[in-house]
Image 1 (tube, rainbow, N blue to C red):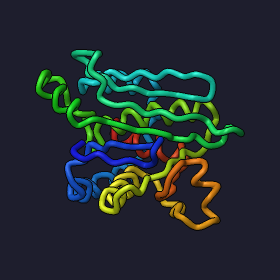
Image 2: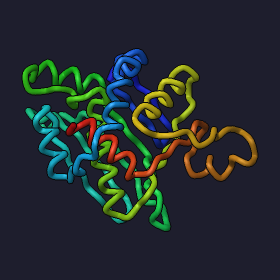
Image 3: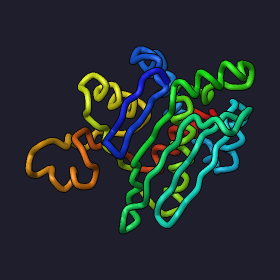
Length: 214
């Protein structure tokens, strides 16, 4: 990922996106993946094995309703590439994605130190997709049906890029959380302004499964 962007003071994302054009170039491939025959859904073990084949070590830890998925460089597990964390909302239906971060400097270092083994996630969405997949599997295990996050609006250009990134990854826009008094409940939940986005966990896992294992 080449740019850093975030979805709330507590919920931010670093994308491993080379440019908006990168996604345009891959858009037709992603559509083909959506239309392909359903592939058996990968479990945690299979995703971790795939990650290792492209130089990434995945793990996930939980505490109560909270979770934290971490991606490390396989050749040196002290090197953290990124993480995703959040919790299951009270009621158990929504998986709240609080943070997703992947650091470009860490990716560059892993590539430099392990040029033959580190493949930056192995697909256009990079390490972010691996972390997201692990997170969605946790949500599925906890009987969540929807994953939700806020694409923070700290800076107009970055906000638009972030929204486009996640739309191409399968999420849909719900509404903009702004200064209006009607948005106060959402601002209390997320701690900032931005575009609220969500998707069913089933749809995300199905789409991402095809991208990883087609």
